[in-house]
Image (tube, rainbow, N blue to C red; front, side, top):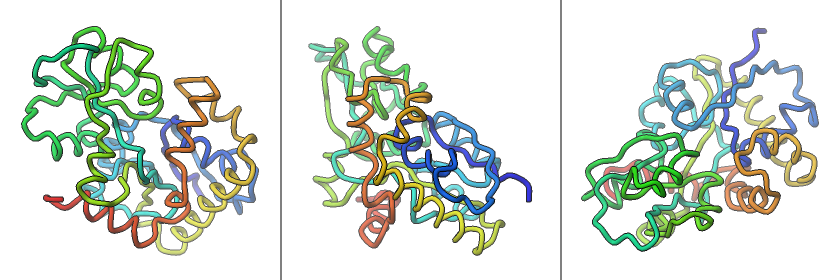
Length: 259
């Protein structure tokens, strides 16, 4: 069997969840995987092109690929209080027109379009460059994800809105950010096998959180243990093990034209 192309992001929640599978801490049952680490917008573009067999995606791109990929119950980033943050330069009171987002197919961008329809210009930028670009004055504001949401206060930036809290206030539901999908053509038996292994990897991570730290740090943008701990605690939870009925309701609400 040829190795399955497995694409994930280098952010701490992915490396924490899948360390056990990728580093032989659990029995992977001989499933061959070829792993790539990509920025979330690169992941979204690659899956739209049909390149990976298994991939992390933004939930916002799911409607565009569901004819070729299936959603897995395990491996999602979905929860409460975990939303992207809209920030601007500290003390700036000018109206927001020009806003940087971490990709046009990300959940962060979908939330901006839904919650701030009056902001017409959303420009894609690598997520790790947004805070510096806003501080520099290249944009009126920017949307921060991953580790950036935990360290923006170290810069001359201030919070405009927590997009996740605004979402929760409007819907009462957790916010779906990222999912794991698998190519439909691989068939139901392999899907079930992959799903089981992802869940076992996450269960191992919960049971042995320290074991994954070297792998997480090898790929993280921010290396402080406190930042990594906050990141994992916020994005990896019971929904990561299994979406369940509430998780699917949240996904349906995000993908509906109107909340």
